[in-house]
Length: 482
Image 1 (cartoon, rainbow, N blue to C red):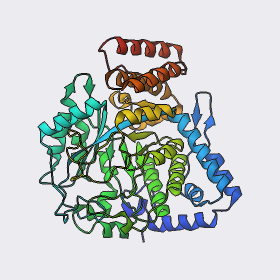
Image 2 (image 1 turned 30 degrees about the vertical axis):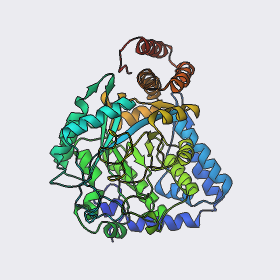
Image 3 (image 1 turned 60 degrees about the vertical axis):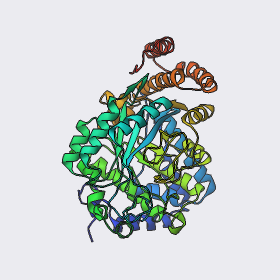
């Protein structure tokens, strides 16, 4: 059995089954160890410095103890600290994005995904470039500035050249005041050369969900197709970083395997990226298995309830304080409200998970990857966020200003990122309110902007942001950024 080594480039050494099992045993043995739990919670708390706050984060073992803890008052303390961390580094901003499904052709046999090769009754579809343009215009007309493109793995129907062409098309569409300013990419594990080509195409974050870190379960759940190769898939982020992509997004599909095992594996992957590349994941996503065509989530016996899901999310926030955390429309409004409190910093809004889903008035279901629980419009999501004192942010400035990878993390860790993010969020919100919002949303949003401008600490930055927002409201000038 391979020894655990976070600096190794071999999947079975930086995600060591032996180390995960030892971690889970340690967590179980200490789940009621109040002195240890208090010590870990104290370590996780943000500590004030002359320039802002710093956080130590937690190891996978420390965080696993908190996840195993069943003491109600300690769990509530986890939630309080998770909220403190989120506010310290991300403020009350929530980044907004939407998925764009390009193609559901796929050669893999994944047992939890309706796009699997043996599903012969799902409609197969691949967008042409004209259809991509139409989808982008529809998304721009909603107000979106940031997309995550999705496609099945199929070297004939969805080769890298097709993905690159779609990215080029997306960035080329300028409709009224609309622009897609950041394209994140969620496609199958590929080669260093292909990652280099994606970087050259101007992508933001490369996203790849592990699905499960349990190797035996992984191979069983991916019986056929190139995704069956556990090592190639698990080592993809190292190849992406070698190809120059320094913003990568991790995630597991909770419900496929025991959640405590996945949690430890996920944090070990983050530790590995930090140990080898000097920067951890830019984002971590927390999807759960959902019902879809040909897929019944009840067939997977590792599902977790909403309370466990909330605790798990909070523990991730304590462990990786500087990492963005994403929850999609897989989850209901009620669940998303809970998770926003304990550390989520990005949400999707107005999402459709079918290929070509945005250009039709009625939500299509024939090519959906999963059922959407939160089916509200983007305007409704934006208003809801503001009513709960979150600033909806359409900002893409860091990526376009080269503040990625270790540069972003150093700014985040020093607290300096707040001098950019807060005013940028307000300026992009002003754009949305002027160009796309309903009257009620616009009224609530303008009141929020006036309140939040006063919270910008630097007077010069505050004055510039206020003037830019004035120009946004009085003209067609757009895309101001710090």
